Amino acid sequence: MRKLLLPVLLCGTLAVTACSNMTHEQQTTLSGAAIGAAGGAAISAIAGGNAGVGALVGGAAGAVAGNLKGKGYW
Image (tube, rainbow, N blue to C red; front, top):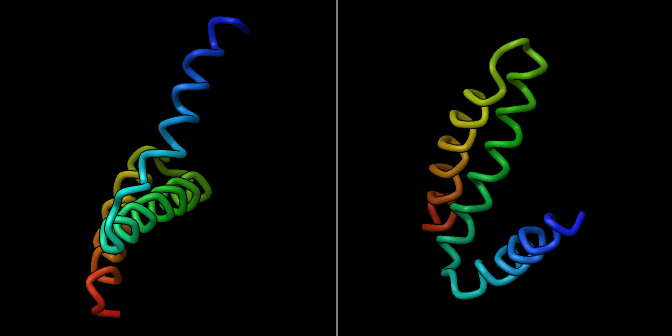
């Protein structure tokens, strides 16, 4: 338990502060990538495929879609 305390605190601090100075375009790209990765992993796992590959493909597609949304194309 004690060995996990420092890494958990560091990850928590990083998660809270990492996105504070991002532009709107960067935020939508990151959000799209995270949502795409989660969705791709879930769909791939349900379909019986490799969840890691699904996460990579979904994350890439989500990042592109989020970037386009951030630029105002949608």
